[in-house]
Image (cartoon, rainbow, N blue to C red; front, top):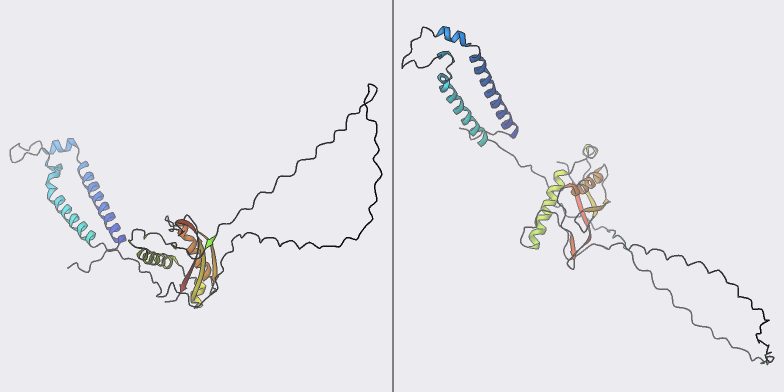
Length: 302
């Protein structure tokens, strides 16, 4: 009978709100109904009533137990309605349209590999010495040295040598230039989208991570209005660096189809830093490294 009954989350919330309001309304109604009787009126109305085993209520006008049948029926009806609505609560999983060739780049393209700091080339070797012929020269004998009397007596005045000022200290050497870390394009273990580390093998982890990444991208990708109005379709290719801690940086649009599609795809990639979980970083020789990741994003009108 109720096979086709489907209730959305909003409908369930409205039902419980209506049930709560109805219950509160009944409580307020009966409280106001019984409060209008005063003790003097009840005593005067029941003065002539005779006490007996069949009439054990002192004031029958305010006897709430005479409505117990109605309260029981209301409770049973509410319980059945709650069970029916709860079992009919239907949720729909959002279907994300992922293109069949979402990870395929249509044509070969030259990918710019970021340059890393390289050591300077060695200096060129010095030129070979030039041998020059020295002409024969006549050796002139020098004059004999003259000997001076250097005898020191009491009358000899000795002058102290003039102290020259010490030269200033040499300037400190310049600080060494920071060497940029190398960014790899292919490593032994490529970085993966989070959420699939519980799989058994590396192949299963990669397949699961690729599918989860595509689900995230095409669920959050917003088709630009100007591109939709002008029928712009195609693929945007982006490059980004997966850092050693799994965060996303240096996002670059390598190929764009215009009409705001490149910016929309870039916004989705940058949003990965706000997911709460970071990528599993790439590893080379067992240590995490920076990896350049190339990703196509397809725009297709339905």
